[in-house]
Image (cartoon, rainbow over all chains, first blue to last red; front, side):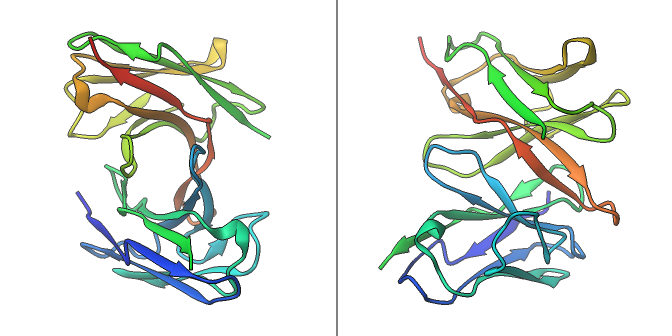
Length: 107
Length: 121
């Protein structure tokens, strides 16, 4: 199985801050990398697919980059609605695997 | 706009079989992976498996001996069966559709709201 490792596991930030979340795969996955946002009691929602393609309807303050084993999700200016947990996930092969999550909290 | 909705019992006894159904509305079953994903309380996401519309299932090896996913296009639904459950199977279970872009990069683009299932006597 491909192991996905996210860092940090949690962070505190203020509205307006630039936030970066890292994700590393245990082997190369090209750009088969997706990012999800999950709020308490809700299903995950895709933000970015193919490492850098913004899903329709997702605000442009979200962006993704990387290829191979190292990836980044960036929120350019954190908004109140962005406080949530973020997961990366690989679709290079099966079993599909997710990172452990990064919880973004209010400072 | 596709919509997915899980249904099934919220409580299952240890050693019994967990059976859930996902009703799909607003789209056909063609060209997608119809998937189940679960999330234990306070933990991360675990992929259970998917059923491809042409009849091919694909399961997580960690669950393969206990899991069956099936598709019933006439009823616009797909199902999950997990046998011999234990407390470790307590989780929120999500059904999801996995689509792909023009480069065949797959991603879960639609999810059900989730169903909490507790395994307890």
